[in-house]
Length: 379
Length: 82
Image (cartoon, each protein chain N blue to C red):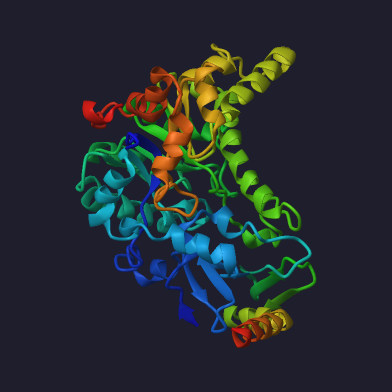
Protein backbone atom coordinates (compact mmCIF):
# COMPACT_ATOMS: atom_id res chain seq x y z
CA UNK A 1 0.00 0.00 0.00
CA UNK A 2 1.38 3.42 -0.94
CA UNK A 3 2.12 5.71 1.98
CA UNK A 4 -0.41 8.52 2.25
CA UNK A 5 1.33 11.86 1.97
CA UNK A 6 -0.05 14.91 3.75
CA UNK A 7 0.59 18.56 3.13
CA UNK A 8 -0.61 21.98 4.13
CA UNK A 9 -2.23 24.01 1.36
CA UNK A 10 -1.16 27.58 0.77
CA UNK A 11 -3.87 28.00 -1.82
CA UNK A 12 -7.39 26.86 -1.11
CA UNK A 13 -10.71 28.62 -1.56
CA UNK A 14 -14.24 28.72 -0.32
CA UNK A 15 -17.32 29.30 -2.44
CA UNK A 16 -19.46 32.11 -1.14
CA UNK A 17 -23.19 31.38 -0.74
CA UNK A 18 -25.16 32.94 -3.58
CA UNK A 19 -27.00 35.34 -1.27
CA UNK A 20 -24.13 36.15 1.07
CA UNK A 21 -24.05 39.80 0.11
CA UNK A 22 -27.52 40.43 -1.27
CA UNK A 23 -29.36 39.37 1.87
CA UNK A 24 -27.52 41.90 4.01
CA UNK A 25 -26.95 44.84 1.75
CA UNK A 26 -29.46 47.62 1.04
CA UNK A 27 -30.97 47.27 -2.42
CA UNK A 28 -28.88 50.08 -3.86
CA UNK A 29 -25.72 48.09 -3.11
CA UNK A 30 -27.18 44.60 -3.53
CA UNK A 31 -27.94 45.42 -7.15
CA UNK A 32 -24.22 46.01 -7.76
CA UNK A 33 -22.76 42.75 -6.45
CA UNK A 34 -21.21 40.35 -8.96
CA UNK A 35 -23.66 37.95 -10.55
CA UNK A 36 -24.09 36.15 -13.82
CA UNK A 37 -27.19 35.52 -15.89
CA UNK A 38 -27.37 33.17 -18.85
CA UNK A 39 -29.08 34.11 -22.09
CA UNK A 40 -32.13 31.94 -22.76
CA UNK A 41 -30.25 30.13 -25.52
CA UNK A 42 -27.68 28.94 -22.96
CA UNK A 43 -24.78 29.98 -25.17
CA UNK A 44 -24.00 33.33 -23.63
CA UNK A 45 -23.68 34.65 -20.13
CA UNK A 46 -23.88 38.24 -18.92
CA UNK A 47 -21.72 39.08 -15.93
CA UNK A 48 -22.59 42.09 -13.79
CA UNK A 49 -19.98 43.72 -11.56
CA UNK A 50 -20.63 47.01 -9.81
CA UNK A 51 -22.48 48.84 -12.52
CA UNK A 52 -20.65 47.47 -15.51
CA UNK A 53 -21.38 44.27 -17.30
CA UNK A 54 -20.15 42.11 -20.09
CA UNK A 55 -21.60 39.31 -22.12
CA UNK A 56 -19.38 36.41 -22.97
CA UNK A 57 -19.66 33.14 -24.83
CA UNK A 58 -19.86 30.23 -22.43
CA UNK A 59 -17.31 27.45 -22.82
CA UNK A 60 -18.56 24.64 -24.98
CA UNK A 61 -19.49 21.81 -22.68
CA UNK A 62 -18.39 18.99 -24.92
CA UNK A 63 -15.73 16.34 -24.84
CA UNK A 64 -12.71 17.16 -22.71
CA UNK A 65 -14.14 20.48 -21.50
CA UNK A 66 -17.31 18.83 -20.23
CA UNK A 67 -15.38 16.09 -18.49
CA UNK A 68 -13.01 18.61 -16.97
CA UNK A 69 -15.84 20.71 -15.52
CA UNK A 70 -17.70 17.70 -14.18
CA UNK A 71 -14.60 16.37 -12.47
CA UNK A 72 -13.69 19.78 -11.11
CA UNK A 73 -16.93 20.21 -9.20
CA UNK A 74 -17.34 16.81 -7.70
CA UNK A 75 -15.85 17.67 -4.29
CA UNK A 76 -18.62 17.12 -1.72
CA UNK A 77 -17.48 20.19 0.18
CA UNK A 78 -17.63 22.41 -2.90
CA UNK A 79 -20.47 24.41 -1.35
CA UNK A 80 -21.26 22.32 1.74
CA UNK A 81 -18.79 23.51 4.37
CA UNK A 82 -19.70 20.67 6.73
CA UNK A 83 -18.01 18.27 4.33
CA UNK A 84 -14.83 20.26 3.82
CA UNK A 85 -12.68 18.68 6.54
CA UNK A 86 -13.68 15.21 5.38
CA UNK A 87 -12.59 16.15 1.85
CA UNK A 88 -9.23 17.35 3.18
CA UNK A 89 -8.72 14.22 5.28
CA UNK A 90 -9.49 12.07 2.26
CA UNK A 91 -7.04 13.97 0.07
CA UNK A 92 -4.28 14.33 2.69
CA UNK A 93 -4.48 18.07 3.29
CA UNK A 94 -3.90 19.26 6.84
CA UNK A 95 -4.10 23.05 7.17
CA UNK A 96 -5.37 25.41 4.49
CA UNK A 97 -5.00 29.07 3.67
CA UNK A 98 -8.52 29.76 2.41
CA UNK A 99 -9.05 32.47 -0.19
CA UNK A 100 -12.46 33.68 -1.34
CA UNK A 101 -13.83 32.91 -4.78
CA UNK A 102 -16.33 35.58 -5.72
CA UNK A 103 -14.25 37.91 -3.58
CA UNK A 104 -11.46 37.67 -6.13
CA UNK A 105 -13.43 40.17 -8.18
CA UNK A 106 -12.66 42.80 -5.54
CA UNK A 107 -10.33 44.80 -7.78
CA UNK A 108 -13.19 45.30 -10.24
CA UNK A 109 -15.36 47.06 -7.67
CA UNK A 110 -15.38 50.84 -8.01
CA UNK A 111 -18.04 51.77 -5.45
CA UNK A 112 -16.28 52.40 -2.18
CA UNK A 113 -19.23 51.56 0.06
CA UNK A 114 -19.94 48.36 -1.86
CA UNK A 115 -16.41 47.02 -1.50
CA UNK A 116 -16.22 48.05 2.12
CA UNK A 117 -19.49 46.36 3.03
CA UNK A 118 -18.97 43.18 1.03
CA UNK A 119 -15.55 42.76 2.63
CA UNK A 120 -17.04 43.19 6.08
CA UNK A 121 -19.85 40.73 5.38
CA UNK A 122 -17.49 38.13 4.00
CA UNK A 123 -15.09 38.49 6.91
CA UNK A 124 -17.88 38.01 9.44
CA UNK A 125 -19.05 34.98 7.45
CA UNK A 126 -15.53 33.56 7.44
CA UNK A 127 -15.34 33.84 11.21
CA UNK A 128 -18.69 32.19 11.85
CA UNK A 129 -18.68 29.55 9.09
CA UNK A 130 -15.06 28.74 8.30
CA UNK A 131 -12.88 29.48 11.31
CA UNK A 132 -15.47 27.79 13.50
CA UNK A 133 -15.14 24.53 11.55
CA UNK A 134 -11.55 23.88 12.46
CA UNK A 135 -8.34 25.69 13.41
CA UNK A 136 -6.88 23.94 10.37
CA UNK A 137 -8.73 26.44 8.21
CA UNK A 138 -7.16 29.90 7.92
CA UNK A 139 -9.41 32.14 5.85
CA UNK A 140 -7.88 35.28 4.43
CA UNK A 141 -9.42 38.58 5.44
CA UNK A 142 -10.75 40.90 2.77
CA UNK A 143 -10.38 44.64 2.76
CA UNK A 144 -11.41 47.53 0.60
CA UNK A 145 -8.50 48.95 -1.35
CA UNK A 146 -10.48 51.85 -2.74
CA UNK A 147 -9.39 53.84 0.30
CA UNK A 148 -6.32 53.22 2.44
CA UNK A 149 -8.05 54.09 5.71
CA UNK A 150 -10.92 51.71 4.89
CA UNK A 151 -8.26 49.07 4.29
CA UNK A 152 -6.48 49.76 7.57
CA UNK A 153 -9.69 49.84 9.60
CA UNK A 154 -10.97 46.51 8.32
CA UNK A 155 -7.54 44.88 8.51
CA UNK A 156 -7.20 45.83 12.14
CA UNK A 157 -10.71 44.64 12.89
CA UNK A 158 -9.91 41.33 11.25
CA UNK A 159 -6.64 40.96 13.11
CA UNK A 160 -8.70 41.23 16.28
CA UNK A 161 -11.06 38.54 14.98
CA UNK A 162 -8.22 36.08 14.51
CA UNK A 163 -7.36 36.42 10.84
CA UNK A 164 -3.67 35.93 10.01
CA UNK A 165 -3.58 37.20 6.45
CA UNK A 166 -5.27 39.58 4.05
CA UNK A 167 -6.20 38.65 0.51
CA UNK A 168 -4.87 41.16 -2.00
CA UNK A 169 -5.68 41.33 -5.69
CA UNK A 170 -2.47 41.61 -7.70
CA UNK A 171 -3.30 45.20 -8.46
CA UNK A 172 -6.01 47.51 -7.17
CA UNK A 173 -8.74 49.10 -9.25
CA UNK A 174 -7.30 51.24 -12.10
CA UNK A 175 -8.58 54.41 -10.48
CA UNK A 176 -6.50 53.63 -7.39
CA UNK A 177 -2.75 53.96 -7.01
CA UNK A 178 -0.78 50.78 -7.59
CA UNK A 179 1.02 48.96 -4.80
CA UNK A 180 4.41 50.62 -5.29
CA UNK A 181 3.11 54.07 -4.38
CA UNK A 182 3.62 55.71 -1.01
CA UNK A 183 -0.14 56.02 -0.64
CA UNK A 184 -0.13 52.49 0.80
CA UNK A 185 2.67 53.05 3.31
CA UNK A 186 0.30 53.41 6.29
CA UNK A 187 -1.29 50.07 5.39
CA UNK A 188 2.05 48.27 5.13
CA UNK A 189 3.07 49.70 8.52
CA UNK A 190 -0.23 48.68 10.10
CA UNK A 191 -0.04 45.18 8.65
CA UNK A 192 3.50 44.68 9.87
CA UNK A 193 2.46 45.76 13.34
CA UNK A 194 -0.55 43.45 13.28
CA UNK A 195 1.59 40.58 11.96
CA UNK A 196 -0.77 40.10 9.05
CA UNK A 197 0.49 38.44 5.88
CA UNK A 198 -0.15 39.98 2.46
CA UNK A 199 -1.68 37.15 0.44
CA UNK A 200 -1.69 37.89 -3.29
CA UNK A 201 -3.56 35.54 -5.58
CA UNK A 202 -2.87 35.40 -9.30
CA UNK A 203 -5.55 36.02 -11.86
CA UNK A 204 -7.23 38.80 -9.90
CA UNK A 205 -6.54 41.73 -12.18
CA UNK A 206 -9.29 44.32 -12.26
CA UNK A 207 -11.81 44.16 -15.04
CA UNK A 208 -12.50 47.67 -16.20
CA UNK A 209 -14.61 47.88 -19.29
CA UNK A 210 -14.56 51.68 -19.42
CA UNK A 211 -11.71 51.65 -21.89
CA UNK A 212 -13.73 49.38 -24.17
CA UNK A 213 -10.67 47.27 -24.83
CA UNK A 214 -9.78 43.64 -24.34
CA UNK A 215 -8.57 42.94 -20.85
CA UNK A 216 -4.98 41.87 -20.66
CA UNK A 217 -3.25 39.79 -23.27
CA UNK A 218 -5.20 37.00 -24.85
CA UNK A 219 -4.31 34.53 -27.52
CA UNK A 220 -6.37 32.55 -29.97
CA UNK A 221 -5.48 29.70 -32.25
CA UNK A 222 -2.72 27.17 -31.70
CA UNK A 223 -1.62 27.17 -28.09
CA UNK A 224 -4.18 29.74 -27.00
CA UNK A 225 -5.50 27.96 -23.93
CA UNK A 226 -2.04 27.28 -22.53
CA UNK A 227 -0.77 30.77 -23.29
CA UNK A 228 -3.79 32.45 -21.75
CA UNK A 229 -3.40 30.49 -18.53
CA UNK A 230 0.35 31.14 -18.39
CA UNK A 231 -0.24 34.87 -18.78
CA UNK A 232 -2.30 34.92 -15.58
CA UNK A 233 0.70 33.82 -13.54
CA UNK A 234 2.89 36.80 -14.40
CA UNK A 235 0.77 39.21 -12.39
CA UNK A 236 1.88 37.84 -9.04
CA UNK A 237 5.49 38.35 -10.02
CA UNK A 238 4.78 41.97 -10.92
CA UNK A 239 3.13 42.53 -7.56
CA UNK A 240 6.24 41.30 -5.75
CA UNK A 241 8.48 43.36 -8.03
CA UNK A 242 6.54 46.47 -7.02
CA UNK A 243 6.67 45.68 -3.32
CA UNK A 244 10.44 45.09 -3.47
CA UNK A 245 11.60 47.85 -5.79
CA UNK A 246 9.49 50.52 -4.13
CA UNK A 247 11.11 49.77 -0.80
CA UNK A 248 7.85 48.71 0.85
CA UNK A 249 9.22 45.36 2.00
CA UNK A 250 12.64 46.83 2.79
CA UNK A 251 11.08 49.38 5.13
CA UNK A 252 9.00 46.67 6.79
CA UNK A 253 11.25 43.65 7.22
CA UNK A 254 8.64 41.73 9.25
CA UNK A 255 5.96 42.14 6.58
CA UNK A 256 5.52 38.89 4.69
CA UNK A 257 4.07 38.40 1.22
CA UNK A 258 2.52 35.27 -0.23
CA UNK A 259 1.82 34.71 -3.92
CA UNK A 260 -0.60 31.87 -4.37
CA UNK A 261 -0.98 29.65 -7.41
CA UNK A 262 1.86 31.31 -9.29
CA UNK A 263 4.46 28.57 -9.03
CA UNK A 264 7.83 28.98 -7.32
CA UNK A 265 10.79 29.16 -9.65
CA UNK A 266 9.87 32.68 -10.66
CA UNK A 267 11.13 33.89 -7.30
CA UNK A 268 14.83 33.05 -7.86
CA UNK A 269 14.49 34.33 -11.41
CA UNK A 270 12.94 37.59 -10.24
CA UNK A 271 15.65 37.96 -7.62
CA UNK A 272 18.30 37.55 -10.33
CA UNK A 273 16.72 40.14 -12.60
CA UNK A 274 16.10 42.69 -9.87
CA UNK A 275 19.62 42.27 -8.53
CA UNK A 276 20.95 42.92 -12.00
CA UNK A 277 18.74 45.94 -12.45
CA UNK A 278 19.65 47.32 -9.06
CA UNK A 279 23.37 46.83 -9.76
CA UNK A 280 23.39 48.17 -13.29
CA UNK A 281 21.28 51.21 -12.57
CA UNK A 282 22.35 51.89 -9.00
CA UNK A 283 23.10 55.54 -9.67
CA UNK A 284 19.48 56.17 -10.65
CA UNK A 285 17.74 53.71 -8.34
CA UNK A 286 15.18 55.28 -6.06
CA UNK A 287 14.72 54.45 -3.27
CA UNK A 288 18.03 52.91 -2.26
CA UNK A 289 17.43 49.70 -0.36
CA UNK A 290 19.04 48.64 2.90
CA UNK A 291 19.02 45.05 1.72
CA UNK A 292 19.43 43.57 -1.72
CA UNK A 293 16.36 42.57 -3.75
CA UNK A 294 17.40 38.93 -3.43
CA UNK A 295 17.68 39.14 0.33
CA UNK A 296 14.25 40.74 0.55
CA UNK A 297 12.59 38.19 -1.74
CA UNK A 298 14.25 35.23 -0.10
CA UNK A 299 13.33 36.37 3.39
CA UNK A 300 9.91 37.93 2.99
CA UNK A 301 8.24 36.37 -0.06
CA UNK A 302 6.52 32.98 -0.12
CA UNK A 303 5.12 31.15 -3.12
CA UNK A 304 2.64 28.33 -3.55
CA UNK A 305 2.26 25.89 -6.41
CA UNK A 306 0.15 22.85 -7.27
CA UNK A 307 1.77 20.61 -9.87
CA UNK A 308 4.96 22.42 -10.87
CA UNK A 309 7.78 19.84 -10.79
CA UNK A 310 10.45 22.54 -10.66
CA UNK A 311 9.06 24.01 -7.45
CA UNK A 312 11.00 21.41 -5.47
CA UNK A 313 14.20 22.53 -7.19
CA UNK A 314 13.49 26.16 -6.32
CA UNK A 315 13.76 25.16 -2.69
CA UNK A 316 16.35 22.41 -2.80
CA UNK A 317 18.73 23.72 -5.46
CA UNK A 318 18.16 27.48 -5.75
CA UNK A 319 18.04 28.34 -2.08
CA UNK A 320 14.54 29.78 -2.20
CA UNK A 321 13.28 28.20 0.96
CA UNK A 322 9.81 29.75 1.03
CA UNK A 323 8.03 27.33 -1.22
CA UNK A 324 4.78 25.75 -0.18
CA UNK A 325 2.34 23.44 -1.85
CA UNK A 326 -1.29 24.34 -2.53
CA UNK A 327 -4.32 22.29 -3.56
CA UNK A 328 -6.46 25.08 -5.07
CA UNK A 329 -9.43 23.21 -3.61
CA UNK A 330 -12.18 23.31 -4.82
CA UNK A 331 -11.36 25.17 -8.02
CA UNK A 332 -11.12 23.82 -11.53
CA UNK A 333 -7.33 23.62 -11.65
CA UNK A 334 -7.16 22.08 -8.18
CA UNK A 335 -5.90 18.70 -7.11
CA UNK A 336 -9.07 17.31 -5.58
CA UNK A 337 -9.40 13.72 -6.65
CA UNK A 338 -5.73 13.35 -7.52
CA UNK A 339 -3.95 14.96 -4.58
CA UNK A 340 -2.12 11.79 -3.59
CA UNK A 341 -0.97 11.20 -7.15
CA UNK A 342 0.21 14.81 -7.26
CA UNK A 343 2.05 14.71 -3.94
CA UNK A 344 3.76 11.43 -4.72
CA UNK A 345 4.76 12.66 -8.13
CA UNK A 346 6.31 15.73 -6.57
CA UNK A 347 7.92 14.33 -3.45
CA UNK A 348 8.76 10.66 -3.95
CA UNK A 349 12.52 10.46 -3.87
CA UNK A 350 12.95 13.99 -2.53
CA UNK A 351 15.04 14.35 0.61
CA UNK A 352 13.08 14.49 3.83
CA UNK A 353 14.09 18.02 4.80
CA UNK A 354 13.02 19.55 1.48
CA UNK A 355 9.81 17.54 1.40
CA UNK A 356 8.87 18.56 4.92
CA UNK A 357 9.71 22.19 4.28
CA UNK A 358 7.51 22.44 1.20
CA UNK A 359 4.65 20.32 2.52
CA UNK A 360 4.56 21.76 6.02
CA UNK A 361 7.44 23.96 7.14
CA UNK A 362 7.03 27.06 4.98
CA UNK A 363 3.34 27.25 5.84
CA UNK A 364 4.04 26.80 9.55
CA UNK A 365 6.68 29.52 9.45
CA UNK A 366 4.33 31.95 7.74
CA UNK A 367 1.38 31.02 9.94
CA UNK A 368 2.86 29.93 13.31
CA UNK A 369 -0.54 29.82 14.98
CA UNK A 370 -1.83 27.11 12.64
CA UNK A 371 -2.01 23.65 14.25
CA UNK A 372 1.05 21.60 13.43
CA UNK A 373 0.45 18.40 11.54
CA UNK A 374 0.52 15.42 13.94
CA UNK A 375 3.66 13.32 13.92
CA UNK A 376 1.88 10.27 12.54
CA UNK A 377 1.02 12.02 9.28
CA UNK A 378 4.20 14.01 8.99
CA UNK A 379 6.03 11.34 7.03
CA UNK B 1 -32.92 35.26 -18.63
CA UNK B 2 -32.15 32.68 -16.03
CA UNK B 3 -29.76 32.96 -13.14
CA UNK B 4 -26.75 30.74 -13.71
CA UNK B 5 -26.87 27.68 -11.50
CA UNK B 6 -23.29 26.74 -12.15
CA UNK B 7 -21.69 30.14 -12.33
CA UNK B 8 -18.13 30.36 -13.46
CA UNK B 9 -17.72 33.55 -11.46
CA UNK B 10 -16.23 31.51 -8.65
CA UNK B 11 -13.12 31.31 -10.78
CA UNK B 12 -10.76 34.26 -11.07
CA UNK B 13 -11.73 37.19 -13.29
CA UNK B 14 -8.87 36.45 -15.65
CA UNK B 15 -10.03 32.86 -15.95
CA UNK B 16 -13.47 34.08 -16.95
CA UNK B 17 -12.18 36.38 -19.64
CA UNK B 18 -9.24 34.39 -20.94
CA UNK B 19 -11.01 33.71 -24.23
CA UNK B 20 -11.70 37.37 -25.04
CA UNK B 21 -9.61 38.02 -28.12
CA UNK B 22 -9.41 41.09 -30.37
CA UNK B 23 -11.06 40.52 -33.72
CA UNK B 24 -13.59 37.98 -32.48
CA UNK B 25 -17.07 38.36 -31.05
CA UNK B 26 -16.11 36.84 -27.71
CA UNK B 27 -17.18 39.52 -25.26
CA UNK B 28 -19.47 42.56 -25.39
CA UNK B 29 -19.21 45.13 -22.65
CA UNK B 30 -21.79 47.60 -21.40
CA UNK B 31 -20.41 50.60 -19.58
CA UNK B 32 -22.49 53.42 -18.06
CA UNK B 33 -21.77 56.69 -19.87
CA UNK B 34 -23.47 60.03 -20.15
CA UNK B 35 -26.60 59.40 -22.12
CA UNK B 36 -26.90 55.71 -21.39
CA UNK B 37 -24.69 52.68 -21.90
CA UNK B 38 -21.76 52.24 -24.25
CA UNK B 39 -21.69 48.84 -25.89
CA UNK B 40 -18.46 47.44 -27.32
CA UNK B 41 -17.55 44.09 -28.82
CA UNK B 42 -14.08 42.53 -28.84
CA UNK B 43 -14.43 42.11 -32.61
CA UNK B 44 -13.83 45.85 -32.83
CA UNK B 45 -16.74 46.34 -35.23
CA UNK B 46 -19.55 47.10 -32.79
CA UNK B 47 -19.64 50.28 -30.74
CA UNK B 48 -22.95 51.83 -29.76
CA UNK B 49 -24.47 54.05 -27.11
CA UNK B 50 -27.96 53.05 -26.06
CA UNK B 51 -30.29 54.74 -23.56
CA UNK B 52 -30.61 51.69 -21.28
CA UNK B 53 -28.64 48.60 -20.39
CA UNK B 54 -31.45 46.43 -21.69
CA UNK B 55 -31.26 48.08 -25.11
CA UNK B 56 -27.48 47.78 -25.21
CA UNK B 57 -27.75 44.11 -24.25
CA UNK B 58 -30.39 43.52 -26.91
CA UNK B 59 -28.07 45.17 -29.41
CA UNK B 60 -25.30 42.75 -28.42
CA UNK B 61 -27.65 39.80 -28.86
CA UNK B 62 -28.52 41.06 -32.34
CA UNK B 63 -24.86 41.70 -33.15
CA UNK B 64 -24.00 38.10 -32.40
CA UNK B 65 -27.19 36.56 -33.79
CA UNK B 66 -25.45 34.77 -36.63
CA UNK B 67 -22.91 33.21 -34.28
CA UNK B 68 -25.72 32.08 -31.99
CA UNK B 69 -27.76 30.65 -34.86
CA UNK B 70 -24.82 28.70 -36.26
CA UNK B 71 -23.93 27.27 -32.86
CA UNK B 72 -27.52 26.26 -32.11
CA UNK B 73 -27.81 24.63 -35.54
CA UNK B 74 -24.57 22.79 -34.97
CA UNK B 75 -25.71 21.48 -31.59
CA UNK B 76 -29.08 20.46 -33.01
CA UNK B 77 -27.34 18.52 -35.75
CA UNK B 78 -25.13 16.80 -33.17
CA UNK B 79 -28.18 15.84 -31.12
CA UNK B 80 -29.90 14.39 -34.17
CA UNK B 81 -26.84 12.30 -35.01
CA UNK B 82 -27.01 10.80 -31.50
